[in-house]
Image (cartoon, rainbow, N blue to C red; front, side, top):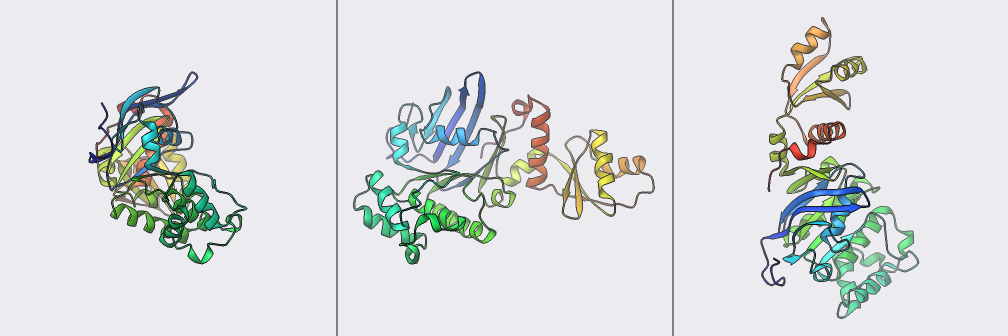
Length: 324
């Protein structure tokens, strides 16, 4: 049962359950549940091919789910897809505007597609909002990755959407452009806009109010960063010293530990054992590695999730979920 119209303004901008999509015999999204309150930024994470883009397209009405139910902005995702599309800004992975038009011409054209009243006024407002005024006559095809990203975001905002769906928007842009982009996103959220953003960057995940991690089409964990780390109950150690490749080989051969390089050190993580220093002393007597217990971070968690979901098809069903 959908909430009639957007006038009700439900507290949850996204509230879907058991969302499922199949292509032929392949289940791409498998009973995913996502809840995002209005005015929040939700980071949507997972490896390539995990089902993130398909999920986003179902939320904004571009794909019809094969199973599941729920609402987006108070509208039923099955029966009221057209109403959702009018209220959502969707930024795709690839730059999709016309490279032989200027920035201003692109925005005015997109405003007409959205049937915005006074499209040139809306374009001028978007230029000002995203700091594009001085470049308004520059051809879109001559822009750098960061400026193309800013133009694409400006186009998404022309019709004053209530929800932004951003599909890996910062891929291929430099660190400063990423930082500027996230400042803009947080400013929009502070004004009440809801944002669902897919990303591979851990520093970006940490900028989100909540996160959801999907793998092989299944939601593994969701909640705030602190909640998902706490729920995983990982034990993590930092090891430093010479010949770290030997340490990685030792841990990998045992099967109880997961080792990953972090700069000049190695992080060793386990969800089942808390005795790595003792195990290492027995396995490599007299070793000279310095081993220190540390609090696990998001990257430790996501590496563990990728490892577990890749080796166990039932991981998604068994993983603990947290409703944020």
